[in-house]
Length: 231
Image 1 (cartoon, rainbow, N blue to C red):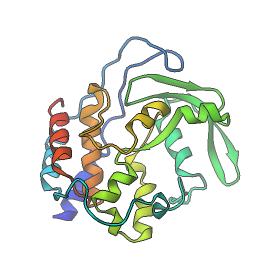
Image 2: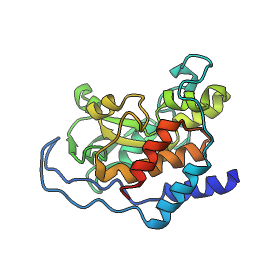
Image 3: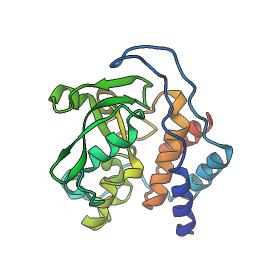
Image 4: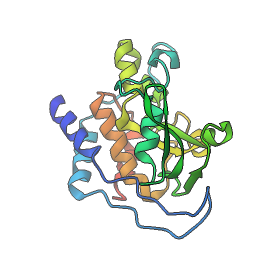
């Protein structure tokens, strides 16, 4: 059964890109563009995966969450010479906009570019990501936050498995910094992106939990079912 869930998870992660409202300039408003729909087959797969996720208590007992237990932030676990932040920034940038440079072994240290924030639909354009203010304005989000994963089963994992989860490109997205801060460690019962992205967000969340064999609590399951309802 677990192998079936993993295969379905891989298929879901191949969904079309974030799709978002196109906006001109850094955080500025503009006309909306359609968000690609998640196919009925993918939606059905997400619903089946959700039904198969084990139930957990919302606040189970166990050790207190420890970020350090997930290893070094953005470690180069795929050994391509670049950390996972640069990998995600390059992957998620609007095609043709990313400016990169060589830094040590990394051949795509991202220093500028344009991104569509999937959570708000805003266009984010940066000219110097070595500037701390600009770098903080675009962040790499764990769709399933590390603290939430800890409560859902990761607290019992060995260190290497937690490190693998923290750097899993399949659950990382380049997003608007302040929006990411507002999301914090919340699950879908407490925080949701804009409605146009809720279907894909739910599918990504479910696929991640299925792939890593993490549980869901009752309110989280209801929220995910509601978001899949907009597909």
